[in-house]
Image 1 (cartoon, protein in one colour):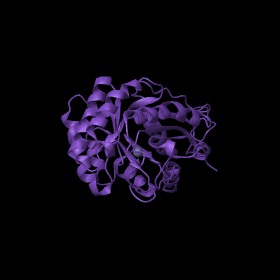
Image 2: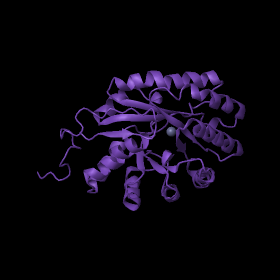
Image 3: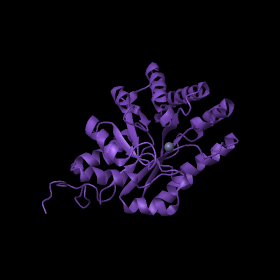
Image 4: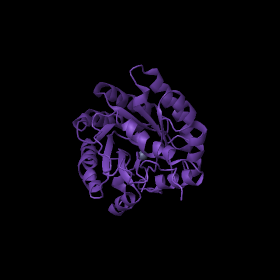
Length: 289
Ligand SMILES: [Zn+2]
């Protein structure tokens, strides 16, 4: 079995059977950014309970299938129009930043590219800088993506405090990936069945830009999405004849390298890693049948 990590998936929206399926397909770790519940939460206590679920119950549920669970804290851009509630949530987040498995602030970003969204985005950045956290960024849906990504990159590049190597900009597509990588950020490609990227287009982008600082994720959530999309990408890479070492870099080594910048990232590699038992062992890709 080849191991992989899904660096962006909303497991609280998924059933336990999905954990079992992911484990069978070789998933050894997931990272779950805080996101929109499908409705606006009414109070800071609603967020506190959500963060407890992300840091307490969800890692337990993942561990039943030997999947390691990591998470990120924020209030989503969709709720940023309520600036006063956003500020209460941002002030409460530090309660959770030293909990095991909390990797940083995310997924913050823009949704409709409004002024309030920009204000709340920058206040999250301030918190991340004060607390020395890594950052995971959501870029808007297709109709607002190009403009929103430009706005986000401008805000990040104007802030001298930010180490670009500690920021992942997610949901990149063909028209937004280049400036993200050129500015030295990590870039995430999201594989969705109906929007964002297909596995084939993600492979195209690996072929065009190389594997450095590139991640792939399913962003599985409560909407139309496929939690096993990363294995679809792995298969597509194989069908195009790419070596296992290149596939492993994108789906395993890269997320490990990026997450390693977070102080609460304590990852235990799968037991047989490096022993040649799994498909990622020595000699993979050169095997003659
Ligand atoms: Zn998400």
